Image (cartoon, rainbow, N blue to C red; front, side, top):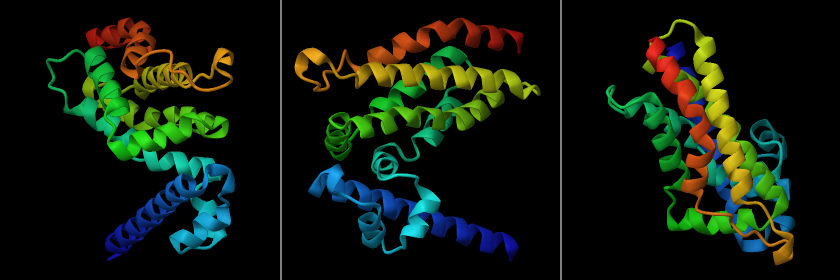
Length: 208
């Protein structure tokens, strides 16, 4: 009975989080991010501002979450889904590239909004840290290593590399009057920033 109640409670939390991020993005697309208040998002999602603050610390975080939600768990799952014969470094790179570039039309519209707003760009880049924990779990399972430190360090390195790639991708250029001009395709940037980690991932796999 306790397990069932816990499961229902978690489902309710997930539903509330989804309602908040969907409301945040919808209002931002309709009004522009600067014209959206936390109270507006909470009202649109049918919760109180206090409840909103239990889930997100800012309107930017909620707006960005509508695009990046669940990506962290999908990255870890994608690594775990690769066959054992695929090198760990390859599995990690392909999982990251796939999950960061597989966007639907709605996500592309939202990304256009995000990349034109400095505060949203910053929040978007910060989401890279969220892949660390599920990725560490996936790497540890692949390595079968009882020492958790190796997997955590490798996952932290991957998250940092993703953050650098995202920073480069959304970096505004003064020559364009502050408009964001992507410095290259995101998949290429991700592969470039992740490349220095390949020797460490390979070495960890060899020790297994």
